[in-house]
Length: 422
Image (cartoon, rainbow, N blue to C red; front, top):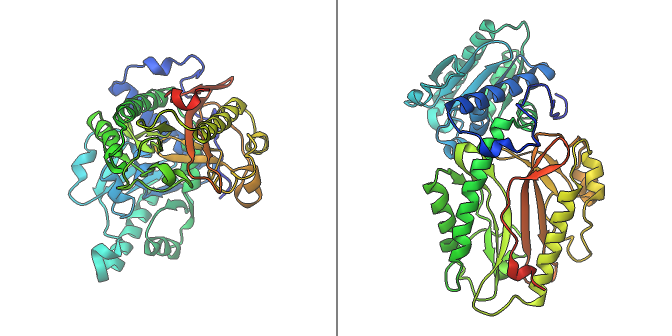
């Protein structure tokens, strides 16, 4: 299996991206159908590029990407209870969780729906081996009905026993995640209409949450206001619990807790929300808690540094630029702040956090990889500033679209006037 590649231009996207027409699109059944067909085309184009005859997808987000069917998405991320077979040239078959076949009744991309085999050891116990053999027999039968003479099969997130059994049966196995990540990386204009709606929903929820910030409430209470509005307006679930206040903002990644928010503290928040239509909205803002006067000089300095980092790195983005060049030219993190830096400068964003992930120059030799920034990519630009010996930190992040001649911001939530004030 080769590296992840975008294959930009291999499937028509409905562009151009530069006119912003996706913001005014009618979100009807026809658009949703076009999105689903585009995503399947993208997946199959990647499969052909990597010379795969078929893939089996267990990750529920990948299943949804390829066929449009959602079912117990969070549960299925830790329980391999359902899976999808996609032939490069042949049928698309969903093996659905027991008693849930009706959920796929109107899925236009599916050729067949069958009950999933009980390949989870915790579900079928000592009978798991027999169910796993039946799983292999099912896949062999589908290969025989597909237009292929090969045995090259991509698979991801499957139980170890299922992978071993397929290998023993003669299939040439490889990681399907490479294929799916490459497919997801280029969005169609119709997809952007759904992403825009998800961002709009999330920004409305953040507006409510920011207006509710007050001393004496807990972090959990504040975060619940955001989540209530997301769920009430069609969003789905949060992937993380990244809301923290005061000293819990530095270092970053301290999860939302029962800590009581105090006057004059900072509250930092990363949305990390799967909004409507299954599309991920990922931007971050930091707020100042009222009740103790204006922000102090240190808080303002942290905020301005984070804003400088974010704006410099957004302005640097351009189509055709290599990941390596971007990393080398990114805003230089000052001494004292590098230890608590965010783990990347930029990452992809679609139905969750996605490829690519562009590493800091100082981390390049350990985790960096090259590639090209392409039109149709939706990226999140990260900024976090917290001194190694400091008390608080500031988290900012913006979600952007790469267009044919630059970028367009997808998230447009403003900066804090009080923290940006001179």
